[in-house]
Image: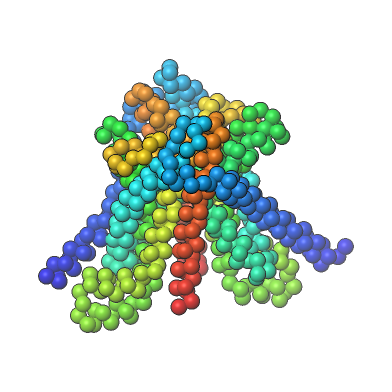
Length: 286
Length: 280
């Protein structure tokens, strides 16, 4: 009896663990299968065509891809320096009394759902952008900024964690040689924690590119490529969030599924690079 | 200027800049939190909990339908996601250990933890909503449980590994079969840790909006039938906030406030658990 139960338990847990892999494989195959129709209809034009006009059954994903890339790039450019600053402050500068309350509140802010950041962006940040740069305020620029604020807590927390892995004895030796704080940070901590820091930036990038709710409110879902950042734009997740419930033809659905597949492949690749290349090395090195 | 002076000046400049960036970062984040609390408390009243959504202009309008819908959707997702996640985590920590298969499952599950949740929504749309022919709360719960699974799996795996192997060996020495060792000794030792993982998992999926947009969809009335579309706090918040009506926007803020407090509360409880554990 015990033997039987023992075997049953072992097999059951193994089966469920394998089910995790199966689900992931299922997600990829299902999305692929659903997007076949669109792939056959438009082939590679799907990612090079700039016109997205569902009423004419024309589906070009380039504006959405462009929007995803540019808004994520903007968010990274704005968030990375601030995140490094916050991480330096938290790991090296802050007095002990401030370290843990500030650190904990940053971690808690990372837990706030992104839809709240989006809502704040719509009601409080859009008017400011409208006043400063004109236009409607709903734009690529707004999306990039709101996105950067949304990923900041996560990025700052993981960067700080990476910096904190530097052994104290290394830092102390550098101080003993007369190094200033900045000398220690740039010559000891950053080289030591480099892989971890870069890994966490890439991980944040992977999250930002798939982020939906923080940008849906403030981007406008306009399928147009414009070099002017103050114009409304769209991104892959924004298109999906806005149009999935509106799609009315098989080709429309299939195109949206192809967008989902594209997004999944992009973020899966980015996150894998972060995990396998940068964060893995850190684990062995540590 | 001597070299030393130059180094000190550079140091001071950079330290000031980084303190400044910390201040700017914190200012933005507290601005958001402040806005949330002020608007949320302003919008809160008893009607929020006792009334369902009404057309704009009606005094007696609330979020009861969304609160209950949220409870159903997240509750069912937890009910499915937690046992599955714990079982899978158990396999990784107790059976698979450092084997190739276990490592692959760990890696893939870790990646899924950061994968875009809207894609999970699209997937569930294809496997549940399309065959059924209509949106349903089941679909929403399935999407959330898929998102929750990797989180529970990861924390269970980590927490079980923290249980000292001497405890396991002692139980084996008494002749206990492995499944009994796991259930009666290992689980007991990792109880608090697993619970923390569950709390964090629930907190994470409770704030998800994107995967619910086209699975559980929305409903303006109180509905407890899982086969039908169902309102959730997050989707309701999204719809109300993007509406042009001021009283709906107010309801949106109330939903945002309730949801954030719930999620922050869970996170804080999880932290307290972890801290207690560390002290022990």
